[in-house]
Length: 466
Image 1 (cartoon, one colour):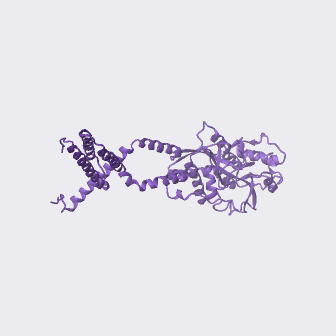
Image 2: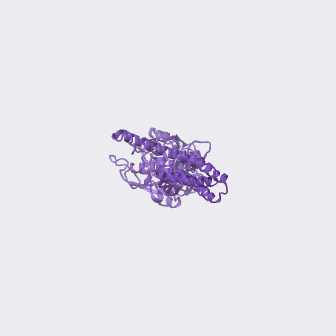
Image 3: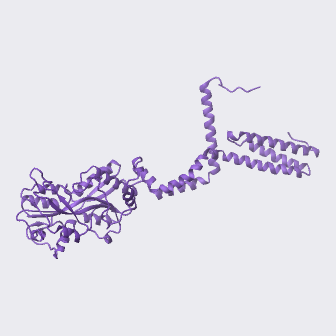
């Protein structure tokens, strides 16, 4: 008579019952898998932990950037980097320094927290920057020489202006180094005199505005607060170097940029004529071992800032650009300037994109290995049951062969006892539903071989246990 299952006429109880049974079978199956392969789990965990440490996917939450003086275009640029970093969950701490060179020294000082800074092209020999990597030039910074009074000699205006009260920049700064380098082209060695004032850009501009000094020499972007203030001084004039074409031949890292007539102040038409300026580029540099995610973030920020900034002296989207080869690009920088920003950064969070991008080859290899395993996951769940059934079949084959070697009742009883023990184990063994036919086939075969052993036992006149 057929057995009627409970609740077969009710949809929801049947559904819940089937779901419960399927869930129980899945759990049971995977428990068996973990029991069978348990020895390999610690090995896999150790491998995964090692891989995580090797990849190092999580960037630091805080990075330090040397900015130069407040009021400079470098400080303003650093603030834009800081805002972009904040949007991506990383704090970029701005560290004010007297000059850009001090920032470079801070980066290379193992006891200093500074990780990144700006560098004026050509001002640092490559042997002084062995632990730095470049992320390209970010902007132009012209040489500005403002004065009041009589126009200096156009062939050597600096020598003429240095006889007046002149701000010459702080010691060991980019401004001072460029002043010394230009004077050296005329065979002159700069020495600080009584009428030379070693001032920060802000203080120099304030003194020039008040009339305390007659000339200012500084190197900064046109958008700098200090430069804009100098444009507004009533009786100021701007030096136009008469030998500028010769200068750039002697100092290769300098370029010529043009300030058009009236570009600084259209209403008052200043400058009154087109003025050619010496200019250097400003490069973003970091310590060599900075986290790859932070490297990509710096490059993404530089690209974003360039798209949203009207750079006065360059074409749109010109920066960032690798121009100063004194400092080598990082591996990340080489990839960026060679092929642009990887697409993966448009679709994933920073650290995830960094892992995918930086470990692409390894991840592809892992995927190539794991995909076939994943496709076999369901069959893996059946593997322990399949292996146990196979082992029982092997034992059964041995016992079947032993039937032909029976010489007495004791031999037959030994086989029967082994079969009874095997059947008890089989009855307690869980197998997946897909192997149920083999399970019951195994039990039938055990019963058949036991029946044959019992026949041998009867031949020897021994009682047969049911």
